[in-house]
Length: 609
Image 1 (spheres, one colour):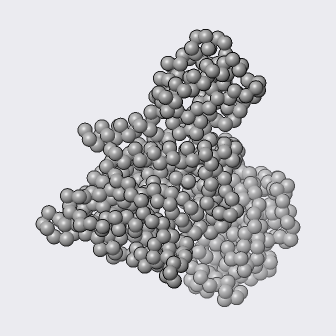
Image 2 (tube, rainbow, N blue to C red):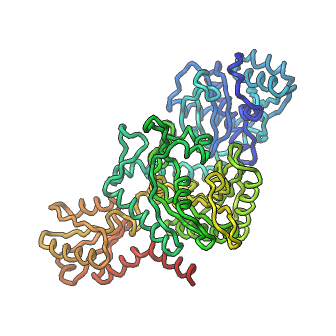
Image 3 (cartoon, rainbow, N blue to C red):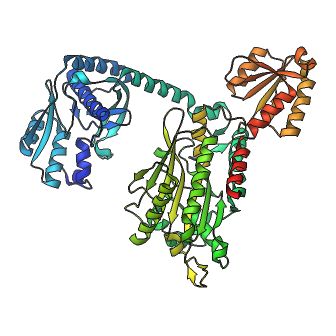
């Protein structure tokens, strides 16, 4: 083994090469299923060599090296062999071998990747023995644990094949990775497979094209083009957040996109975040395009002398941001290079921290209710290894955030080491309709940037004091939020957010004027976004297209409806129409369109008594 294959490998990474730690019955079963799959592959291709076979979310994988190029058609054949092994019910038997004997064993069985792992373990942590597991006539290097026997393997399905370099290094051999899903019961597996199929239908990239919301072009990789309908959604989300600025007393600011690199050196981004930034040169000086708004807001704060009476000062900024994400990480709207955040920075005194952060938590949770995210998980993310500032400042910040979460009596989970490089944070993850978790909002408590930028305020004692900085985002990145929301609602936006809120459909040309008159009334009284389908096409085609475009309501008018000042109202997703008068429709639409404003009004009542 060359020195290069040993480089930069820690003891923990080596342990994970054998198998990451397993903490539950389900993980144990999935881990054992991976071994059964390897055994089945060995039965079919006796010369197969094996890399690693860990558990992953919803299943497992195993990396293999064989001369045959696997295709999806091979997966049922492997599954069939696995089922034979499960039926045989062989026990998993653990044994320990001295390192030298284990190396010799795996050399004899032509398992060079296992040999490499054991040699690394011996060289790095002076391992004397390693553990092996045997079931039937198949033996593998593994630290376990396993289920008692193959008979206890649950429901499984092999999902896909991918390429994977050994240890993730492109200089190493490329193996074939087989992914599988496994659950304790067939019902759980069936539900998971159903959700996967549903996810394909809800893919925001697919729906974004079908609904004419956005597109991507190779001339601007990772930077979405929002079309007219997508821009309506984008602007309506911004307007909702702006409407919250009133009751929560924010001031909106606009700041530059490009700054001298010295700014990013002072803020700590140059040292800790440089690889994710874009840089350019202006007048032979290095400039950085901002990946975050926070340093810019400090200049607005320091533009004049501040008193404790001015605090808290809440500055919101919808500034455009750019981050140099690697090409392989780009994923539609949920991972982009050019984006906008509903960003804000609160400058306050230490005594105001708890009250200010509590307000932000309320703002975030009420907003998620509006969008139908009723399962929210809260995390307290603590200091990362790579960070700026003294440990005493981090201690103060972490204690303060914990006090807020304890005070609001919301359950939360400690997420060690996942804080921003300048401060700990509270993160909010929502679960969508497909039971996937997405991190959205964040509250970051920062004692470091005010110190680095020498921010001050005059206290009641007439002395100079340093403010605390709270970084806050509710929806997070607007692009990412839109992508998540599209998949959550399957492209059927709530009425107040839909690009086209209702479509009027005259049955015949002689009903066109009746529909146009009501369109004018809805626009005048409610300011709604409406269109009319007055094409000379069949009603069946018009109805199908309205459903395909996921327009919340179709209002159909013929002789009977026009004579009675009514419409046949069909809600998206429903098969039956309901006859309603114009006044009834206006009352319904007013209530539905008022949903975001109700959140704002409720906030005003709570905050202003």
